[in-house]
Length: 413
Image 1 (spheres, one colour):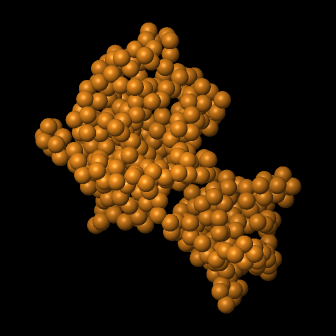
Image 2 (cartoon, helix red, strand yellow):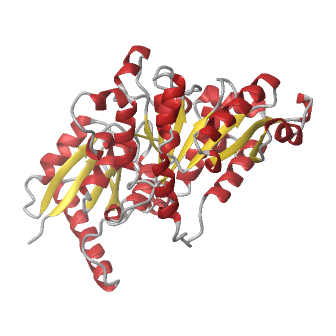
Image 3 (spheres, rainbow, N blue to C red):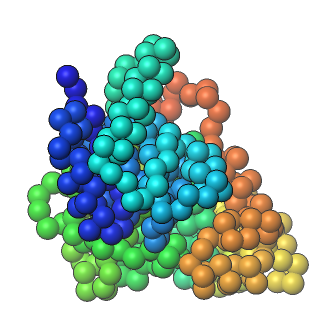
């Protein structure tokens, strides 16, 4: 007889130990793992696919309700049982709306917990049989063809990282797409700060052994409350030299089939890592602002990108559009001799406040003009169900150009 696999999620280690001891006497139940946070639980659940997830409701960083919502989207074959000291109907209603199958109040006895687990598992098996499903369905078994978007700007301060993080959060929060944000500003990356995340491991830790595999990359992910996965830049500038373009190429190759969108936030310089992402990207988003120095450098960048044969990939994003800047988008297009794809209105008060809070403005100020512009970006970016049969052929032709070799000669590396 198959044993019911269980994942225990609670931020208090003593509580996890107590629950494990309660279940060790049950012959038909197997504890396959523990997690001390919602983000850790999502990573473990996606890898091990437990039958049952015992979820504490009160956790820092990401509470059990939000984690349950993400579990329902990411690991739909696993059933969540919420554990809480709260017995109010409001908590019960929120838990069920998030996708939980059952709710159990702490403290509980071993036989009570085992009974609830068995009941939920049996109901799930009956539901799956009625729907004609297999007892275990792994959503990640299907290969994805991730779209790689490389963000670039000619200098800092134009809002490149702000747009990249907010776009990534908006994409991920829909629940329709698996999204990864990679911070490739290796010396002074701020993506984790923008999202109020604290990296325990970063890209630098992936370079300590041989070839980089997805299982190693996954263990370094940070999970944002939107469901976005983040691969953070090294925590200190001197660690940046540990990460080479070859490492980044291995990482992108491994994650490409696991995510729908991979967003790369590059450093504002033409260097090997940023050029590598240009080669591998399906789109290059050049972020510009309405000032003469930025536009001058943007025009030069477009010329370099044209020399790399990447012009068809380029999308120009005009940030902080405002009549007070003394020019309008038509002036920018005339200056660059390039059409603007996206415009982000100037909304300084909301953007500064959200940055200081470590909360993306699409979340903290969803009614702002900037948030509306990001949502419009997502609508244009996300495809219909129709797939271009020539997409693979086009991509192969682009890769065969290998333009990075030419630029290495130009810049002397």
